[in-house]
Image (tube, rainbow, N blue to C red; front, top):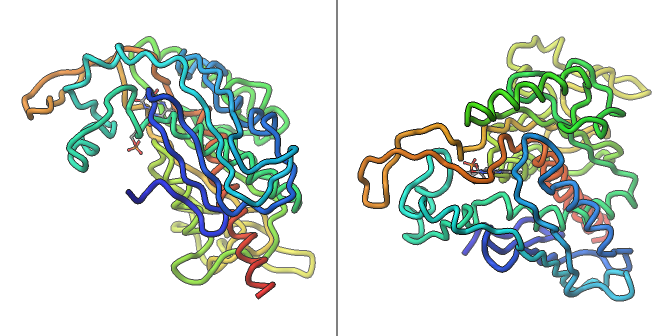
Length: 352
Ligand SMILES: Cc1cc2nc3c(=O)[nH]c(=O)nc-3n(C[C@H](O)[C@H](O)[C@H](O)COP(=O)(O)O)c2cc1C
């Protein structure tokens, strides 16, 4: 079935369901002779794990990555790399009462419409558990990008309507919401607590910045770099909007405000978000993702059962209050995957 593979040269295929035996990824097209260890992958997976913030589920998964192939003596061999992570702390029983009910906001009803069958345990394939596999692949992509002086960071710009005013990247890892504004992070904590007690959930905005990206990455018209990034970030569950640079704000600007004047030293502003005509211009690439609130909430809502009969549902169990901040490393991952693929495409074109 299509839809589980991403990339052109650096190509990943993820597999697995939330409460199956495990999840994993096969990476094809990774260059040979690149250092790669389980520790490098584990460091990224640990950033996705629950438990880091009050907005996260209490599911406790060790998320131990095992490299099954494609690496010899801690170096990539150029053959397919397969990485596997076992599911350990799955409580499928907690989902049995929803086996015949569709959760509003989740993929239950649409998966059933498409396949006529669904693994209802923990959201099956539509679960965020799938993102473990992407993040493992992202660790490999990031290692390649680092060799080329490219770094990618994501942080929380907004959570539950509370926006970061300061942009001090040095404090991101000092608060549980990965926010560049410590004061805003404190307010976010209070907001999460209130909403959690109400049995509800929250959304927000993640900003992703890629630095050191050379000019010239991307393609014309259908495969523009901004289009590739939008698709990649939008492929993450809960992401309902993607902006590049000034994004929707550009619609309210004058041309004289929105253009980034050019000097011999570089651009004087970056409303373009580092991309012009679908091709990187050498400036920082700036992407923002609008993250919707988590669909599984305790507050009672109307739904239907699999026979189409009216019912009500209140989802109990171990759910995140918000995909933020666990989604941040997934956003970084998707940007890394696009950039590494574009980098390898550019190399292939130049060597042709
Ligand atoms: C990091 C992360 C954590 C998530 N945690 C949950 C969760 O605990 N419960 C839930 O119902 N949905 C959770 N989701 C959201 C669903 O996966 C997502 O809303 C669902 O697949 C429907 O897809 P859509 O939001 O793209 O329409 C999470 C998503 C991400 C990215």
